[in-house]
Length: 472
Image (cartoon, rainbow, N blue to C red; front, side):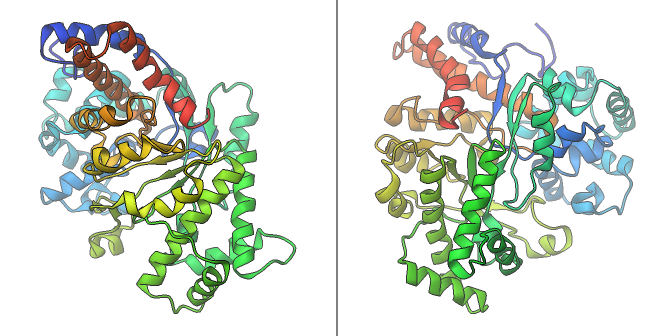
């Protein structure tokens, strides 16, 4: 046994000794299985170029809104953490701000991931991590900097060391996917890095560049097709381009899960109204809802798995958005309605052959009330794993409890890490595997599942489900 939290073999496992022993045996089945990451935000060129990681602040602190938002809540300016490209302070000074705030992360998912990364990836002693603060901030900074300078500490080597088999990126529909092509053509690299089609700025009329992006995507239609017809054909063509470059899914970060089937004339009129700059907020919602229906139609045709990530009030604090930009920690969840919202899509495509629809939520009240019943009837529907604010141990355990009694284990997506923080990927997947082992161990201890079946189930949750759901 060890005093290190991050190295304790029983971390996140049940406190009851008997149940813990069952969980240990279940975890042993899966802790060394390859990592399948079918939804994430690590840029492909990080792997393609295999360039050294930047300094500790640029790698660990500034881009991670999980980290910066909590420090900001304690009264520290985001500029002091070099968020959004700001450079009011140097990297070492920003790191000191993070080190001073380290106690804020006790009990949080971010604290768990960071501890694991510090000890398992960067090799820091546990007592140094436990006592991170103003007195040793520079010592830790220098230790991590030294690790980053090692020739073997490059993205490709870590990809192998972490045991990653599949890593999906998130990409603009008009991305050339040049980095993906280079990775795929490199016979010396055994991993799979897959693009993901993310068309939000082309569908959301409220996006500042929507009209300009429509011009560009319409040009992809070819044969001089213009207007709404060219817009749809351009999207279809780019989806096919992504499929040709290995994509398995299309991801949609919409505001709500509302879907709407409009007639061709009505949709075209709404499109032209938006192009004239006359669309109202109601028009925006209706058009996005209709385009979600169209995206489902396209997924049925081209085979891309459709994933929906709704329920985030983006850029909740406008002054922060104006100064630092998007994805800087001020997106806030809100309640959503899946049952009514998704019905138009499911009426036509819910039983379509080989259509896979993965529904995520930030509103965990819908897990048992809506998502599990939907996945328990529609062959196309799978319940997406807890993500963002819910990708924490207790929330993941609540997820399993909420959905399993209605929809079992086979109708869930498998874990997704949804991260830009490359070095935290193994910690996140390890946490999920430990939570699943703990949940199954309780069912075994309560004589609700046999031990033999539990061993089969956990392998399927970790390996079978993501391969099946995301067509890997």
